[in-house]
Image (cartoon, rainbow, N blue to C red; front, top):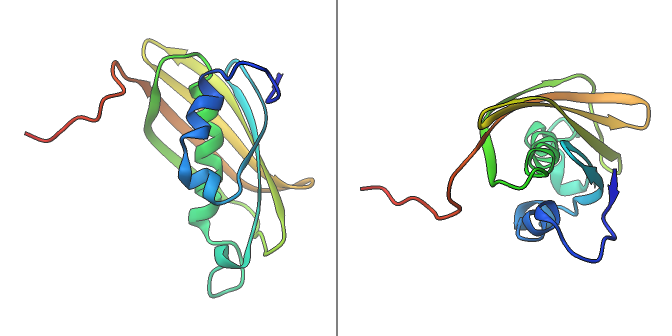
Length: 143
């Protein structure tokens, strides 16, 4: 895996630097490599729901960000074609969560990636993302 301290930013660092949603939540890129990424996020008071547990949307966002880093590690601009998440255990305010993404397979312009979100040794969520490389980074306008 590559540490994020490399002198020249690659596609993962450039993408994450432009990702205001992840940056605004304090998500950190710990390491990455070909088809892999490890990110960390601390659950804040603003991220808990009425049951005082981490809102599933934030867990999904962390896993989705790790997925995005892993599938964009190859260079072409790649986006999510779909994703599913299973919530396995609750997370609480103050918990430090680590999302580890790994490529399962790539075929043509598509790929499948698995992401485990953990708190220490406890699995909090399992995510599976399906990616698609796109030809352009330009925003497509509706006709």
